Structures are given as C-alpha cells and as structure tokens.
Length: 276
Image (cartoon, rainbow, N blue to C red; front, side):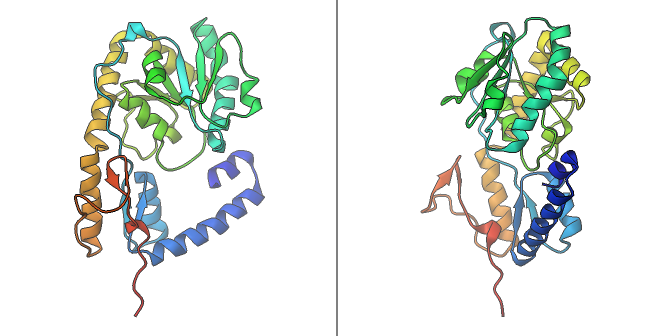
C-alpha cells in the first residue's frame, strides 16, 4: 500500500497505509509467531516490531518433472497473474507502454501473451498482432511449456511472487523487476534477469529470448532453486522449527486437518499468547 501510494503520489493513500500498518504491528506483537513470505519483510518487521518472533516461510512448490520442452520448441513470452490484484494491472500497463516499444524494435514479430483471471477490459483492449490475450487458463502446464520466457514487470507490491517461482518450477526462466525478485533468494543472471526501466527490461528479455546457452543454463538453475528451497519436505521442516520455537509439539506427519500443497494448514502464525 505504501509503495502504491508513493507511485501515485497520493498523500491520502499513504495515510491509509499508515493506519493499516499500525493495526498490523499490533497483531504481530500479540502473536507467538508471524510468518512472512520474504526476507525483506522479515528484516522490516525486525525493525518495526523488535522482540517479535518473525519467521521466513516463503512457499511450498514441488517443481514439475524435467525435462520440459526445449528452447527451440518454444515461442513467445508471457505474463500470468490475477487482475483483481492491482499490481498486476499496473505491471501490464508498464510493460506495454515502456517495454514493448523497445522489444518491437529489437525483436520484430515476437509475441507477448497475457494470461490470468478477472482481466479488465482495459487490458483486453491492448490486443494486437503481437499482444495476444489468453485470459484465464485452467491448466498451467500447457502454457508454461509453450512459451520461452516469462516476465514479471511489477512496479509495486510485497510478499512472495508466486508467478516467478511457478515459472521457474516449469523450467522457464524469467525477466523480473527488483520488486518481483525482492526477498525471494533469486539472483540476477542465475535464476532470473533483473531490470527496472523500459529499455533495460527489453534488453534483458531479448537477450534471454535469443541466447540458447543462457536460456538452458537459467532453465536448469531455476528448477534447481525451486527444488532446493520450496519442496514440501522443506516446508515440513519449517513448521517444525516454528513449533519448537514457540514451545509446541512437532508437526504431526498425518494431521487430521486439511493439507495445501503437501503442507498441513496451521494456525501457528496467529497463535494468541496466553494472558495471565
């Protein structure tokens, strides 16, 4: 909210963000543990809520089996997001207005595919010969196997960027902004390419799109990164660490409640401190 307010130069939105921040910090101080989805948020809360137990637990994502389609079998670059989330709408506006003109200059004829739910008419109207509106997709594998590079041109937002890790889990390298890469552990030139202005973003996209050796190297590195960092087994270890820290029993292997992505859901993040 703060970043959006600053981007829009809105004093009112900035004040509203301050009110929400005050409420959030009150909840954090009253909880046994607060789970955050990025190391950037963890560092911020260690400053703003000193003494609170703030634990980095990003996501659980089992990488898709390799091998996937090869560099030569793919074409086009893509964006996937839900457009009920304003940062995704802004990202498309930025990409079309600031990045796509340079891409057209450097890579004529390359196509940009836009996928996701709740797509507003303002995005649908962007359709052209090289901007393809794909809309909602019920199955992700065919989309990620069809295209060569994904983009995450986010200019504001927070937390964990699922679109980036999902792309890497399908062995598809990505070009992202610093905001999209923030606090996730990805490195520029290793799992992703990072750029922030229109020309630099376009140059990184064209480089990754046309350099097969680089693409193959980053495709493998991205898959390895997801496998090493976000497996269900690693998620289980993280829950155990949380419960041990707050003095609870270790997470049961077969709990009698719902399971999401291989990791049981839990209320550890919002466990209320007992009042004496």
